[in-house]
Length: 482
Image (cartoon, rainbow, N blue to C red):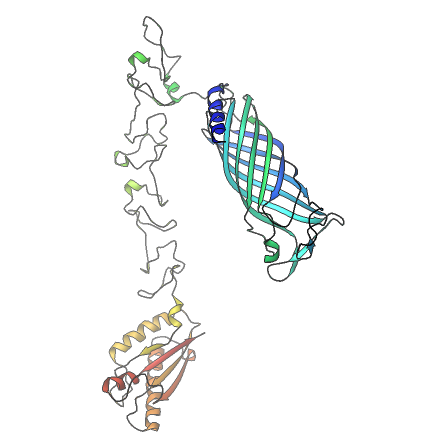
């Protein structure tokens, strides 16, 4: 089989004679195909014809973008085993599969577009709009949906496609494409219960024939860019014998030091390419012939400066050439982060967050900090309820965050060690909790968002037998809720 393929490709390359090169940009075609739905283990749809049309656009030498539309209908083989069923559908019922296909592909010709026989290969995708109809009543079948509802066995589903075609071009304006195509139905868009999706076919295979009409340009070969510097047909210096110019650049082989100059390149008197801006892309093929010398090595195949991060500043001038796309940058091409939260402007949904506050990947305050209680081990001397300076700094940071999220409420719980009487410790814990509340209120936190509880000498977190343990038990715990 491999030898046959190699022989076939060689035959196309050797025996395809050149026709007049066409510079058409568009094509309009129509055709038919023979389609087969397969890949499942339940339905058995018989192959049948499909019909459609297509639009094409040439986007470069040998590259084509194509949109095609087709319609087909397949009938279920009623002679299959009648035991199986999908939901309430019996697999030997009279089922009609009606579908409309809308696909797009990017195609590449393997050989020169001037050949009358060529091979075309393409990849792409699209959407399939289909439904299954009861052939006896012409009504759409009902099946369970993905949310336990009853829904029509009808959907729009995305697919991926690959195709290859043999292209005959008997005349510049006409071409005949004969090919095969495989569509993989991804299931994206279908919202059926698993008992239905598990039995649906996944592949649509087909063989197609299309007749295309080409238009939008001239049937004459496109002029080389080198032709623009000639006022008339090139005049060679008279030499005895045969005059040969292998690469067609206007300099005969005897005087041409660069015999393999690509078509369209401007050359000097020696037949070698000119590159005015020294960017490695010769004049005649350079869409940006005035790039700066420092851009050398950082231009695309068309000779234009590359901007890898699409920030409007070419890489050779960009000090930060790998920014996230969409970030606002300064004159050096580096991202601007107004609130210094690590998320650059342009991608920051909350561009004015408080400095030093943890944020999520969108630049907004990370509310996960409120998922667990905040414990303040305030350095209380025994019997005291005053807040030490270090704890005040923590409360100032907390108040700043709370003022950005007014929907967050809190409970302030005060605790003591076991030194002293229980009633005295109860009152002391209330004073400690109230003092924290009062301090937060002075920092702008609304009183109605705060509940205060004195818990007394309970819920110890350390031993009261040591000074260190008692210090840990003299604490404030703030619990957050919405």
